[in-house]
Length: 135
Length: 134
Image (cartoon, rainbow over all chains, first blue to last red; front, side, top):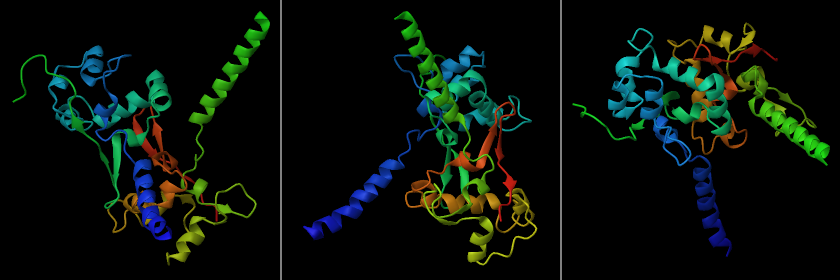
C-alpha cells in the first residue's frame, strides 16, 4: 500500500500542478474574443463596430498578422501594443476585461521560462471570410 | 417592509463596491520591495524570514548594493538591456523558471502585475519602483 502511495503521490501532485498552470487562453485574442449565446465578441465583429478597415477580417493569424499595419508607432495604424493596451485598460472595457473576465497580462502574453522573454500568444482567426480570399 | 428591502439593497451595494475596490486595489504598489521584505515571526506573512533584496542578493555573492536607492530603477545601472545580465531577463527567469515548481507562482501566486503596472491612457506597461528597504 505504501509503495503504491509513494508511486502515485508524485504523479498526482504533478498532474495537479499541471492543472493549476493550465492556460485558459492558449491562443490569446481569439481564445477570449469568441461568439457566445450572450454576445458575439469575435474580432471581425468588434472591429467592424469601430469602422476598422476590412484588412482586419482578412488577417489569418491573430495578432501576428495585425502587424502588417500595426508594427510600431510609425506604422500606418500605429503600434498594436499601445492600441490593445489602451483598449483593455481604460473605460468600461477595462472593467469588463479585468473584472468580469478576470483578464490580465497573461491573457495575451506568455513567459518563455527558458529565455526569460515575455512573448505574445497567437491563434488562427475564428471567423469565416465573407468576401475574397487571402493570397 | 419596503424600508427593510431598501436597507438590504444598500448594504448589498456597499458590499459589492467594497469587493470591487478590493479586486482592483494594488497590493504591491512599489513592486519588488513590497514582496521582498523582512517578515518577522508573528507577522501575517506566509513565511518568516528576511526576504529583503540586500541580504538576499548578498547570499548569492552579489556585490553590496550601497548605491541602489530606488528598486529596480537603480539596478539598471549595471543590468541595462544591453548588459550581460539584463534585468528584465534575469528577473523573469528567477520568477518564472519552471512555473509549476517555482515558489513565486506556486506559493505566492505571483504574476506580472506584482512588478508591472499599466498606464491605460498611454497604453504602456510600466515597471513599479520603490525605495530600498534595507
